[in-house]
Length: 438
Image (cartoon, rainbow, N blue to C red; front, side, top):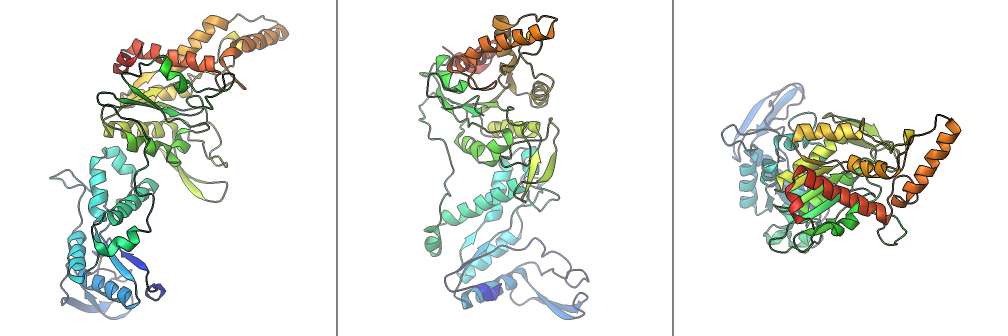
């Protein structure tokens, strides 16, 4: 790697997780002497190489890296280690590694920029719930999941970008997308923001009167916007998994402030295939489980259960001081047995399991809207199959005024009906959000 460095290159040196190992063992022989003393050393027979060897201090090796990088015209940067999944029993905080102080000392004495990744990421982990902290690691207490890797990558970028060290200015000029992605919401004193998250049943085209509409586009019909700010963050075609993977949830998470509210409503697309090009499907159920899948493009992705993604969003909201509200999926224009379809044995059951586990507020829009539709259109079907088939088609046609294009997407009237169902649900459970209704 040393010979690959060219003049003008930047080289980040972040190493040390394995430096506490044995000096001369037969397997790896990779340990170093703790500290930064340039003169200390240990000699002995290296069982791995089968010859005499000398081991120096951690600081000694960092100086070697710095000298080699500079000799090739590169710009060295020392960066402390990624944090481990380990807590200090006395403080209850993530353990900060001693290599941080050693690297900071070497950087200061050698005139090299230093980024304390251990502290930046450690401080973030300190604010997470124990459950969230755990899923940032995978397999052991050192190696991260994708969530942990992304968090550390952002921490490293933030450390570099916001460093006051003038030596980093050329590198900072080349960086982009370091600022957190947030919704541009007009904040007014005394007014919380209500964020809506979900799929096309929450946010759709929402333009033509005879087009497809998401119910959050009609939330203004039930909420008093002089008291609360509405932000429709839904996105058509998404599932819990794709909403998180594509950064749509992170955008909401980054925007949250104490006192805000967030509706979480998914399910229509979560039943899709897991490994196809849209990559929306999830593991059915609510178990705290995951599986690695080979995707359509031969890449690999860790996929979690439907309930896991819901718990993640709920946990993230609470971390920010916002109030999550779980909302069951909208009913479809399907009428088995002359009554509107109820999906209580699958998604309804899973919603309730998450509610029981987390204590999150729950608005059962699915059944509130279904009750409304049944009251207007349900009918006892004939015992004659052909007549029953005709009756069912007639029901679907009449109920179609609340739907558009297919059996899932709502018309503008249907979106308004679902918004009314949400308001009715808030009042029924006595939710604090109900005070912002018209």
